[in-house]
Image (cartoon, rainbow, N blue to C red; front, side):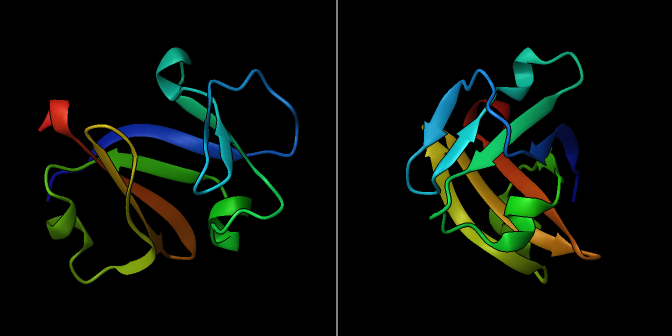
Length: 108
């Protein structure tokens, strides 16, 4: 499996200039591709359904060519969801930390 680095996501309780809000996960986020170091800031509403590990620990994200292959045998924290058109995302737990996999239609 080939993992291509995408970004690091850092949870915060501070207010930022948010680029978007993902309603189902109750997640405010900045766009990592606008940051010179590929940092995505994320803030979760109090009633966010995301697991505590994702809400409290920074995550590293990788683009994968096939989500199902990438998830084989992994400890899945958040099953596959689509935060936007042409993008599928899932989170796994690796050595106690969250890792995000992204399958991006335009990058396959």
